[in-house]
Image (cartoon, rainbow, N blue to C red):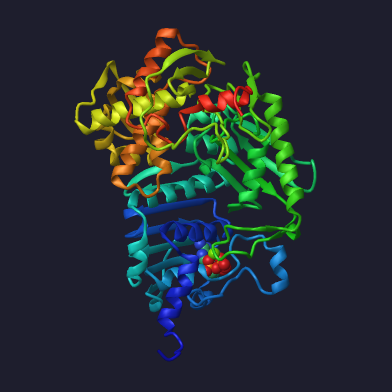
Length: 575
Ligand code: ADP
Ligand code: MG
């Protein structure tokens, strides 16, 4: 095809896509505009996960009538005049493309009145084309309504994730800004229900509590590293005992801007080093203020990335402030057990490092390198021979003997595997029975958790959870799977939710498997738990009957095998 200039419409659509990827990115741009306009109150109303309606209403400065014609053309902004001003940017916006982009891909309506004017303006734009601009009476401030987002870009509509995912993104976005801007009153309505509400009191902790509830708020540690250097770090961080399976609650605001930065997140993880188990993440809400000149905010159209002039300086300060607060307040470490095995000069090195922080769940095992004789042989299937249990080591591993050598079995991983197969079979045959609770429990969840639960009621039922919505954000729980009885209804359900949350694109089948795996992980015998010989034998014999005894449901090995030949060679009985 010959080269042609793209039509204005197509070009607009492509450019819009960089800024407005999905409904939640439109919401982000709109609330940033409200914040820039000095609003003390922002109301957000969402319908159908933002596909039908996004409405953002604020009591900020408003837009003077004379400026209205500019706002639908790209690179029109009241916030930046010269390039050299970029490193003095105090506002969240500066690229002047959000409104133009959103209006290019939606049916857009804006009603605004500047504080100093008596009469307001209404502007209507459809797919980038101005349809109407009239002067009307209006309250001071600005209301933007975005209807039918992407109506003229069907390809983008198709790629949007499920409504539940998108609603959760929006809820997450608003929670974050509501916490970072406690002086602003936020109210988020999703499909007519108010899901997030803060009071605008200016108190960071109060805003955190309004969003995340008392349970978390009560445990969080306040950090304040002001005055330590030019870099200010303030916020709330969780003690090691309060942790999650994903890093989604590591939330960073730099100079008022929510950003995502992998190396800064790594610096935070470093501060928790040895305090958290592998695979667990803290809850961290940090407001970092650094001199504007140390920062480039103009890296990404969505403005979610920044570049630091001196990254190591920033990481260092963050790490030190967090670490000092954590060590100052952390509870004492429970019995610590660690040892290293080493066989042969370049042979196997397997180290286990087990720490008790609110219940040990897993341990790190460096697998023997390939070509090594000491094997956890083909980790997929393959039955294991009948084994004779010799005993338990370090309250974590079982030693067993088979016709072909010695087996070292990870008791937690092995039990996970056993439970996983039991539950999968029960579920496949439709006979998984829940343990009926003596008294049904009513449990309150957060709005996005409610959605996840409601969407997955069927799967949960199959696993033996019996629960039903009980008005508002509460569920009544009548039964839970037998194997998680000891956790209690609330912890068992929260464990499951965490896993669904992590799963962004559930494939029906795999999804169920993951949930089962998660439940089993919680239910399984832990490392550090002393077992009687009878219990050890039962565990090993149940494992022998598994279809895939050599790996846990997460794919890690349940056992390491030392073949007779290897032992003989290592002891110099054979060459
Ligand atoms: P930017 O925020 O990068 O300047 P936008 O496209 O988001 O670009 O907005 C364009 C301009 O419209 C802003 O510079 C601002 O002057 C005005 N504007 C947008 N939303 C609001 C609002 N809620 N209140 C006041 N002014 C607004
Ligand atoms: Mg903007």
